[in-house]
Every structure is written in C-alpha cells, then in structure tokens.
Length: 214
Image 1 (tube, rainbow, N blue to C red):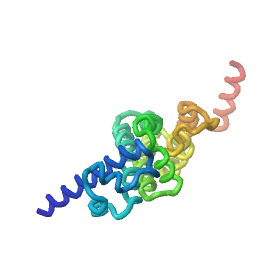
Image 2: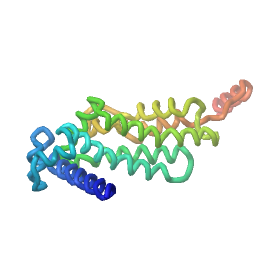
Image 3: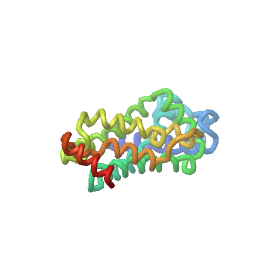
C-alpha cells in the first residue's frame, strides 16, 4: 500500500513538473502562475500545493528536470571506453551540445536556468557535483595509466571545468562574448592535462639542438 501511495505521489509530481515545463516554455516562468499549472492539469491550486510547498519548489524541480537531461548524456559519454582524454572530450562535448540545444528544445526556459545558476540554487550545486563526479574518476584513471599529469584529480577536475565554463555553464548559452571556440578550448585543456615525458638536462639540450638543426 505504501509503495502504491509513493508511486502516485511521484506520478503526480512528475505531471506537475512536465506541465510547468510546457507553460514556462510557452509563457516564461515569471508569467506562469501556480493556478495556470493547476488549470492545465484540471486540478486546483490547493491540490498542486499538496505536492510542492511553493512556486519556487516547482521552479527548482523544473530546473532539476532540465539539468538531468545533461547529466544523463554526460554519464552516457563517461561510460565509453578508450583513453582518458578521449572520454573527457566526449563528456565535455555532450554537455556543450546539451546547452546549445536547450533553447530550441525548451524555448523560454533559459531565463529560469540562468536565474538558478546565478543564485546558486541547491539543484544547480547538486548538478555541478554530479558533473565533477563523472570527470574526476576518469582523470584519476588516466593518471594511473600514465596518460595525464599528476596532481589531485579533484583539483584537475575543477581546473578543467572552470577553464571550459564558457561552453559548459548552462547559464551562458548564446552569450554574446568574444571567446575561443569549443574545439580551441578543448585542445588547450587537453594539452595541459596530457602527460609529457620528462627529459633530463642532457636530453633536453639534445632535443633543442635537433630542433634547431631541423
């Protein structure tokens, strides 16, 4: 019986979130009221508040639902096999593609996403943690195989995501700023992460002389 009640609660909450996503996409979140959401589901506002304590709670659930799409595609990319840099590139590309495609898919939801990111809503902080949780193990595994530079995997994860933020941050979609392309930033970051063979002083001198002679 308890499981049936939980299933009904989950189903009702999901319907409310999907209705909110649709209406926010049509009218924008600032113009959409709880009454609008309730009306679209043929229920009362009071009934909606049985499942969400406030309008803000609905908005947070909407943001979580939208960002979950990004986490899902990033997680799928993370499960691929291959060298660490290739897997990292796949994750970052998946996130960037999700961000770029969101305005077309969800239309006017971007303002809400931007608000949530700028105000550090809990759902956004959770999203950030989950993305770091996908990247960090790959960096650690790459270090263990000698593919990547040494150092704290978490520190390198944060550096990588911060450097790529202009393409990964869900609030910066379509930002009209002068910025390197995704591929340019990716080459820069992977070059910084890639482990290079250590040359002894004599080897380094010979290496420089060979380059000069060439």
